[in-house]
Length: 398
Image (tube, rainbow, N blue to C red; front, side):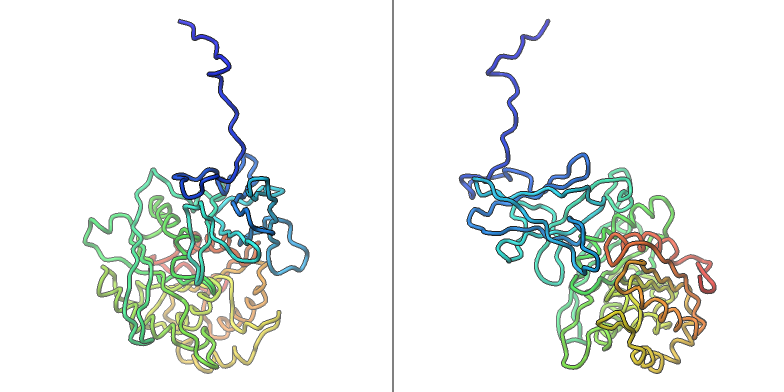
């Protein structure tokens, strides 16, 4: 039977434009999407702030074109409507992937009040924006494969005299079998936290996909807190507070509470930026603890400008001379990745020179891009399949 033509009363009505709710606390569901990705990849941001004078969006990626030579991304300004809703759309498509953002309301960083996906850096809270696309599929959740579990652990650090936290990824099958697994200790960068490799880096989903495709050995990944308490005249990544906590407290805790293979040959360490510096200073020089190393987007001799502190590199070699000689013999993999647009690119060559001086064979990967999570996720996806293999993934500099 033919359906009657819709009347004026039954015809579909166009959706009302987004507006701030008149009864804020009565809203059980968000009255609008605070982030909306269009079919063309452009992103619209919205927030209610009726009393605000100026609202912007800041992000870890460029929402607007960045002026030549600018270090930081340019904030995206929002415009206010009559209801107090501020909104703006990026002028072009946003690169597919996972990106952090926050609103800046009258100069104050503000978490997305209608957000449901969050990242927790060293301080504060960021919203998380997912932009779909083929290039980001490797780090996205796949409902068609088995998934591991991410746990949050708390342990007592006798070294630092405080309680510490870490995130631990156990691979698919860990909860059902009785086997023991190799372990990768994966460290975040400055300003981030032990949450960051999960909420922003999606290390767990990257590993789930690699394991499902049989490209990576099933492994446990421990993501520690890379920050330690400040000490006068002791820069955080040049003192050994992090390394001592790692080796004296965290690793023994993990080995006692998870089914690990507690040997250097089944243990790796990697990190990005500050975490890469920790890896250079607490991993490369500990061949008795780690045989698999990954350094992302940082090298030795970091200075405030595009210079090199050669004296710091000389100190590093003097302090670690005997250990670096052992590392040349014992390391199974030293992987070093850097983007050509990274503001720390100039630290790559001096670091590789140290490796060459000590005959530490290393696999060097140079890419486009800069000091970004887009690169770090790529590096993890390239690094992880090389771990814990019977045959070393390299011999010699590449």
